[in-house]
Amino acid sequence: MQILLVEDDPKLAGFIKKGFLSEQITIEVAYDGMIGKSLCEQRKFDAIILDVNLPGINGYDLCRFIKDNWPQTPVIMLTALGMLHDKVLGFNAGADDYLTKPFAFQELLLRIQALARRTNNFSRPTKILKVSDLTLDTDSQQVRRGQTEITLTKREYELLEYLMYNKGKIMSRNDILERVWDLHFDTNTNIIDVYINYLRRKIDKQFSEKLLHTIIGRGYILREP
Image (cartoon, rainbow, N blue to C red; front, side, top):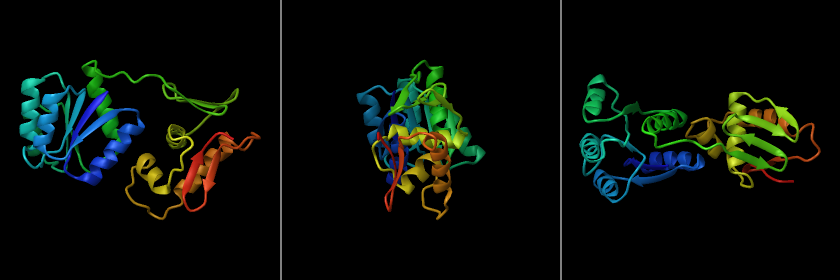
């Protein structure tokens, strides 16, 4: 799946790009409307995410350009402009969906997947993630350690999936807060430590080989023994 994000806030664009890449979805970023228009002319995208207040060409005009030339390409407006009048302008410009900031990345992901499915552009493949004898099926969300099935809460599953996608890498608290909790700063909460301990009890405690480790001062890592 190829996504174009047109967003002039580098920090927000980086956060969104990181989220999509962790879902194995390719994303191109343009930081103004003119670059976004140029990229649309150069290649085909399966879905496009547009801010409204963009330098060069605003999001409404860019959306009209996209729909005039590639009417089947789904477009979602992602903007801080949340009044009904703003939404009317967005939908009248041809937008397929409208999401206001602040937002949860998971909601943006789900909306993009739903839009792309409607145009038959996206079908998320079943993927089995594996670390030693720990397996996670991203389709059924079934988790096993050897022959033992492990039951996880929704948040425990999201944390484990993120760590398994990044197996062998040290993930900092901020990485986890942004990707799993959709928080952009460290709130000094111990919620990550709590959920790491929940996971340890379920995936490591009764097994001789330990997979989930704390790297003091740096974060957490899920790795082969």
